Image (cartoon, rainbow over all chains, first blue to last red; front, top):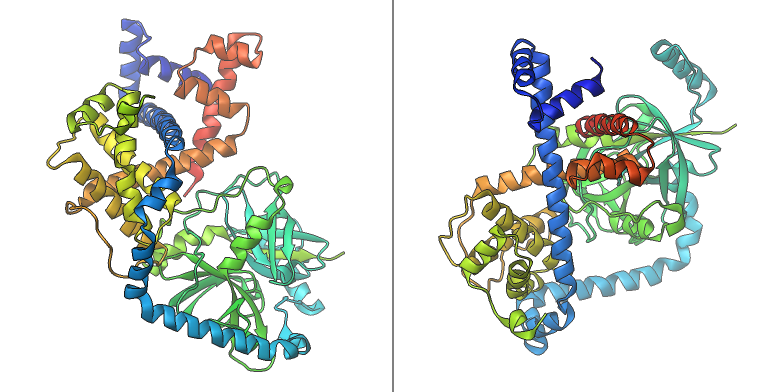
Length: 360
Length: 190
């Protein structure tokens, strides 16, 4: 019996469309054949889930329709009584506001002071492109040859990247894919998929890739969410990426809320960011994305940086609508908080990719 | 909708009976009655009106499912119950996005949390999330065929006509193929 025929029989059985004899003989089969019994149960559960899902979507639509009729704006005005609200805000937060104001003034002053010397210092940045020379390329090719025996992988540069939608949009660093003729991403299982560069912001060093390979079947729901706000100094952070082409996990803390010369796009982090780490995810302890690991400074050893997630979110909003199938909705439900680090990484891993670039 | 209907707060038993009877008007009255309370809670605790909408709808869904499942016993005022769920959901969301400063400004009394109930709700939410992305990956025309047949209970005849299948057997084969693929996509996800 083919799968389809079997499904049809199961459906008729579950819908009570069988005659008495047929039903009896089917139940007998079910008893004798554990595989069959499993299929019946699975089909029933799946069917119910599908129905419940349909009901949920319908309920959500009904609630949204009702919500449309509420004048939220006016309500909000009424519920936030302005003068006393401001007074209360000041009363409960004046110390924080004062700190924020002095930090803002400090940042403005230091940016103004340093702005002049900024351009000259660009050369201090060493882009973390993983330039593999001829020899190591041959070794790599050989070892890949042993693994795959089919084709030799001669990528010319590599970095890391991570997915932010389940249909294969990936964030990475601009310098990783800069000047590449073609880009492939490789997942945790070692399968490679062709990708194209959808959007770049060279100034912030951000690039958005899209997996275009027809072998790509999509990812599950994104487990982490994305933090808009700044993270605090000394917060625990972690990353996972492909330095030197092999997957490595690191954790550490945020050392400074500014990068080289006080540039406010970056955090300074205590995680060693090596060749090939560029473009990887930076998580806080709850598993929210708070940044993208990025280039290291040329002179001072041991200083490492990450681009703040706010700029990634901006970049995602700036992707031209006509290059997307549908609007990007960043995941807001974090399903990682409360898990231990190793459990978290187990779930995060399949959403982090090695980005490989090729030049003809 | 007339004015009286909008302004009146439904009694708790009206709401519960209304949900059991699938009454659109009862759902609407419920929704309108308690939204301001939740909006007040959220916007005065580091949230905005979109957060309020999300949280409130999730709470209504929890209530709705509980009533529908028949295991809802009202041990307090419905208002208190809804406020407590929203408070709990919002605290969880705040701590997830690291915006929780350690205290929350309350505007109503509330009940202590029931952890089991929440885990159940979260599990189900996760399953629905998987189903949503599996359906999206499934693509057309499969998505519509599966939705029409398994969710909207349309007849095979209807589906045949909509998609221009010449005979019911072809449509049937297609339907099962689609379902098999959906299952595969669903179970593939981790």
